[in-house]
Amino acid sequence: MEIKPDIRFLDDIKEVLYDKKWAKTAPNSELYYMYRGIKKRGGLRYDITIIPPRMLGKEFVKTRGNRNSDNFPELYTVLAGKAFFLMQGWRNKIKRDVIAAQMKKGEWIIVPANYYVVAINPSKKILKLGNWVAQKNKNIYKEMEEKRGASYYYTKSGWIKNKNYESVPKLRSEKPLKKMLKDLNFLYGKKRLDF
Image (cartoon, rainbow, N blue to C red):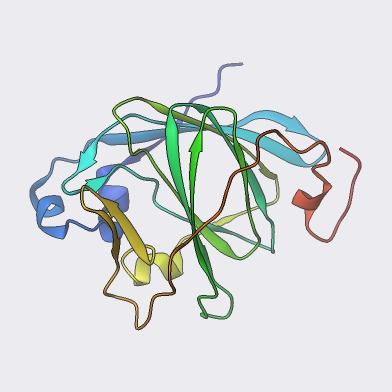
């Protein structure tokens, strides 16, 4: 059975873009493609996201940004291209931490529970991502939409702070993992199952 992608259009993410002036007149075009449930195993699912290169005005193309429900973490890898992952802690409306990870093919990153994640394609090549997450997870977008995006935008001029936040923690870097973890039990949250 062929899995059809969910398509994210420009109009779906306009509220979280840096370049609002550009977004007002830009046509509603396809930005990226999400193939959910490519594999399913023991209560986890494996998704693939494809993000073609593009500029959204002054900002590099990115995902809408979400956090997971029920304290579920997530595990991402780069299958092709290069990526920036911006991860922003959010618990009880308190921003604890903002992390940027620069990644290339074959590298992995854990998105902790209660962190928003935004994937950015900063190159001129197609970015292809894979991720493992609990099947019971539901994506949450609300807080980031209210703030018009994450704490930082990645633009032609580099990282720019989002002025819609009262305060923005200093951006810190995290190195990705060089190989996939053998034990994925942490992705279940409280309930542990053998993978």
